[in-house]
Length: 304
Image (cartoon, rainbow, N blue to C red; front, side, top):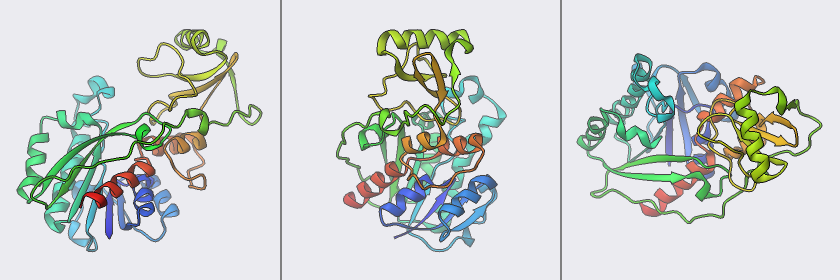
């Protein structure tokens, strides 16, 4: 089976597809750095760096399957007021590229990944109707990475559009949860640590609560509603594009590294990332976990 990957980022979906035996022949993203590293890790794929609003989809080679992960930031509740802005509107509009590409290629299967809030977009019913008008049946599958043996609590919606009369429902065998401890390097020497006492009061308060609840070794989450620490014996919280997760040992704290976050996203240890940790963490946080993509594809193969 041949596939394309729209909004491919650094290659999470492509990596998972390859593990499931799918040949990803073409991948596109608007970010030159992401395309550069997708190409380094997947040199056999044809790459395009472009704004997919303006793409000529007739130039893409023939394929059977389309993957797409339109920008999620404009849909996510985590964006707060930013969801009501021109930038957010432009972000949400990337989803129309799926319709445009489908109209040209009429793929057998289309898989669209996004946050569950995607369905709350005012134009979602119109977007969904566009696929249906092209002859697709659509199933909606809410999946959490932690149920698939990925050491992270990451819930995403996968829309699977097929030409079948009825939508295909995906089924998964639930895997044992993998703890965050499995991806953390507890060797303290190589890393730059800070004293908890140097951090802002909100961090110090979470750490005090975490030490009370969990002992001397635990995780701190800098963003969100966390008021205490998170156990290293549970999956990591959602990996984002910012330095959200830190390891606390005693009175010292450090952010999780690029390698640790990539492992939490189920990337192979030899996957290539930019030297800039900021650029690398942005790519990792935006990625679809490869093993999540693999599980979705295998579920489609079973159901088809």
